[in-house]
Each structure stands twice: as C-alpha cells, then as structure tokens.
Image (cartoon, rainbow, N blue to C red):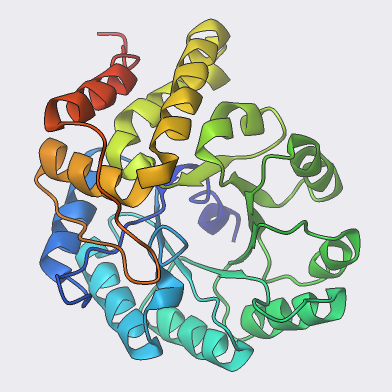
Length: 298
C-alpha cells in the first residue's frame, strides 16, 4: 500500500471537461487535453471537480466522462475521480463505477445544499470511503473541516488524505500535524508554494491545465530552496489570478485554444462565459508573462 500511496504527490491539474456547443461531453478534446498533460509530465489528473463542472453533469454523463478519461489515460498517469453529488447514494454509485474502471483515487466534497452537521459530513464520507478499496480523499471547499470530522476520518483506513481548497494556511498545518500519514493536496492555486510549507505533498488546481510545466517547475524549485524566484513568481501569479477571476471560464477557454488548440467550450449553465476585455495578443502576453518564470537548468 505504501507504494500505491507514493503516487499521491506533485502537481495535478484539476481537469477541464471539454463540451460541445450543446453542452454534451467532447471526448476528442478531452483526449487532446489528457495527452498534452501526460506529455508535459504532470504528476496526476483530478477529474470532475469544480473545474471539471462535475456537479453540472448527470450521473450518466459523469460515468461516460470517467470511463472515457480513464481509457485515454490508460494507466500512464494516476487519475483521481471526484464523485460528490447532492445525495450520498449517487456518490457511492459513482465511486463504485470509478473503482471498477481502475481509478487510482476517489474524492468527494461533503454534503451540499443542506446545512451539514459533523455527523452528516462524516456519514457521507464514510459511506463513500467504505464502498470501494480505492484510496479516498475528502475534498474540502468553502467550509472548514471541523476537528470532530477530522478525528473521525482518522479512524477510516480508506482515507489517505484530503484536498484542501482553503486560504487558511494554519488550518492546513494543523491537519498535517494531526495526521502526518495523510497525503494533503492544496487546492488554492495562488497559494501553491505557501501551502507546501504547511505540509502539503501536492497541489490540485485549475491553472495547471494551462501552466503545468511552469507551476511544476516553480513548486519543485521552491522545495529545493529557490525561495526568491518562487516568491517573485507567486506574487505575479496571484496578480494574474485576481485579474482573470471575473472572466475565468472565458479566459481559460480562449487561452487553451490559442496556446494548445484545445477547445474547452462554454461553461454549463448556470455558469457564464463572459466576454473577455483583452485581445488575443493581450491574452497571450499574460500567458507568456507567467511562463517567463520557467527557467530550468540546461
């Protein structure tokens, strides 16, 4: 099991889910995206999370996307599938489906829509975790992982770590210090390096679809002690992320088209693809500024 657990580290793009104009899954563009990221030597792929709009697809569509993506990856790279849904029964079915198809990890958000108590969150996670023998990673986003839930998750052998999309770095450190055997992934792209100081072993994020080689290089060089370069990069990266947030779906769709000839498509409603305030030349200038920090030794 320790060898299995070693794959859970490094830089993992939270995969976009390419769609056709009618909102249906575009498998050919997904193949182009997965092949690109494998060629770029990222460390793993996170499927159908927030970036992948997993909650906006039906159960049937999510199974179709999972099967197609795992077949494309073909065990050349680890794939973790986010199975969280409005109800736990659907999440369990999605987890079992992903496990049968060979997913390397299963992840899930906590209960959504209804106000979640610690009991609700733990039972939701427990039922998903115990439905397969695949390493399970609860996904925290927008809500703190309560101490009670963490305490109870520690008793589940299926839980191998967490995906923590939080800007509260002390919270990450506290979880690491309590559960040092867990593999913690940071989910806030703009705190990729800072979270590594708090005990994360990897980072899962949206922008790594576009900037995989650069972000992997920066994170690894930071861990090797090149803090000055990483600091300059992270400040530039944070400014970049702040600037694109109002039009984030449109920006990444256009940037992926311009840079890699991969079309993500318009986001599924209720998400909106707003008009970009920049020309194509300006978009590529923004991309090139981020990539200018990628200076590996020759």
